[in-house]
Length: 107
Length: 129
Image (cartoon, rainbow over all chains, first blue to last red; front, side):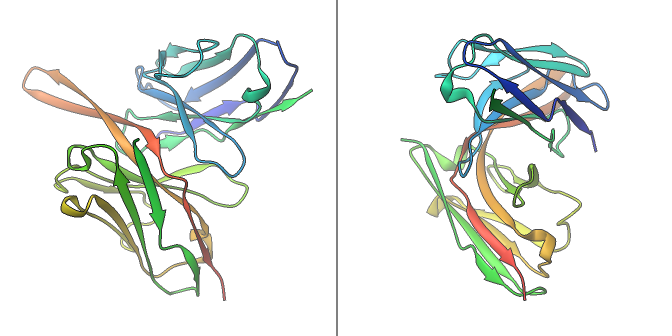
């Protein structure tokens, strides 16, 4: 299986900060990467697919980049609603795998 | 409104069985592949199983292969997960999720890539004596 490694595991930031989360794949996955946001007790919500395509309805402050084995999710100006846990997920292989998650906390 | 609603979770003893259901509405269920994804308490997300729109293609995670069976009834707009020989480590919230497919053609070969765009709220399975 393709292993996905996210960093950091926890991030403390303030409203208005620019935030970057990194995701690394154990082998090349081209651009077959998605990002999800999850809040406590809620289902994951799709933010980004194909590494950099913004899902409909997702604010433009979210952006994704990368290809191959290294990817980033950037929040350009952190808003109160953005405090949550973020997961990357590869879909290069039929056996989907997720990163361990990055919890974005209030500083 | 596109919606997925899971049901069937509960408390079961180790070695027991449970059948989860996922009712779909607001979209043409028979046109989409579907997945089950789970999340153990305080842990990350783990993909469990995939089924294509016609049920012709099915995949399982190694952790559940031979114990879980995914199925669907397109006439009833429903997805199922039959879980047998349950273990404590199967304790989790189980989500059903719709798959959005991209097809890439290379010569005479077709490659399919899918991610999950719509998720249900989940149903909780607890395996404990």
